[in-house]
Length: 229
Image (cartoon, rainbow, N blue to C red; front, top):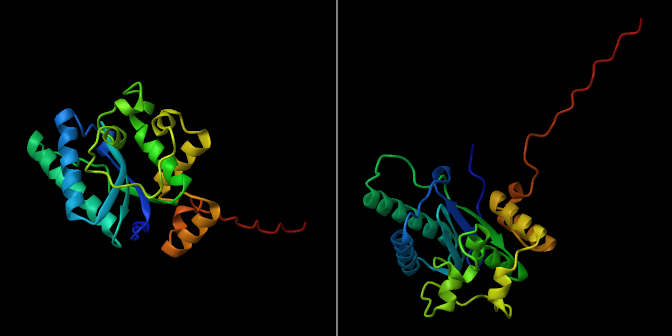
């Protein structure tokens, strides 16, 4: 089955994520998180990508970023995943024992307005939502902590300003509709934004498959006419 198209347009905003194979742990200790942050730093020096928000979790990670060249997000994410896999196997002596990641990374485009802020809140409160900390800013392995403890060399200035009281906003749960919208976009690669923006983005980037209902269309077979007695 061919892979569905992936948006990767210069200047676009994207949420990208990847998970450990079978949801297995990929960060076992603080040194693992530190090593991945170094990989992120190296990747940002090599590739023309801006990183705005991120969160590293025990078995997955989230990035909110902007490629500055067409196709650069894919190249950046491929380098990050490949480098992390190589170094993980070398450190844990697991070469030949299976995949680190479950599949290629997932991503979806984000409208450059309040939808961007919703996604950043979703990303930066991930550890809080999982019960790993009592306050989102306590999680050491994410952009909120880095933002509050400058300098934050991994992070680029945001395309729109943070709202006042940002830390409190991150600690406030997303609404059910916001959470459902982000999760649907992550699952399908569907653009996240206003209906008109989604329509134009889907058409321009040929992402029609991300908004179609899933499953095979039912085919109705007409009944054969009954014979008269």
